Image (cartoon, rainbow, N blue to C red; front, side, top):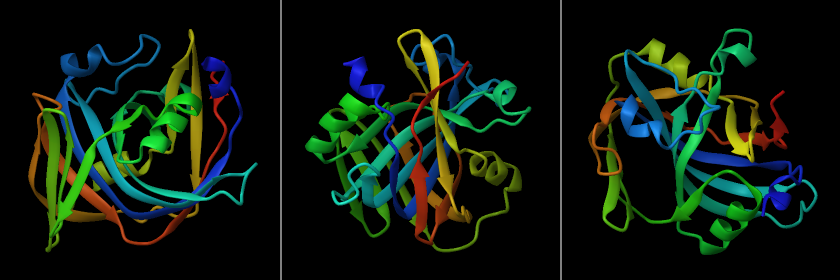
Length: 222
């Protein structure tokens, strides 16, 4: 199975209606989900998860540009400490779990990528989104109004542009290139999840523009 993940695939596509719901959890709650080679970033004794909810359009591997696909992707992205690899700047995440409703994409993703996609139901009604998988759920509602400015959180979330994973006993990184990343703080109410017992909401952002991006081939970290 690892053979297929070693194929250097380069994806391009568009990000639509990007939503980033950020919350912290106790370090102990995520410790068992992270490989030993990857260091969890510490926020006053807690870990931070930046959950992304995005509609991906015209996604395609550069080797097969005439086979585009679309899907909605929700994922728990754990912020990690990769400052030693980036001149003292933290830029990375580790995928704890991802969700989609497309079974075909799940099979392909499991074979070729480190997304950790799994099947879930994604419902949205009047700006309230609920992702349900068996007995677990995460829900949030975005509403009108401008929240108090949280520039520090915006800088933390805005700096993310690469994902780390383990292949065998070696760590590798996949970098994301995008032309713009205009995060806008938004009000979020009703956040609740049973995926994590210690979750505490800290802030939400949206990107209202269509973002063209590249998901570069994974490389091993020396």
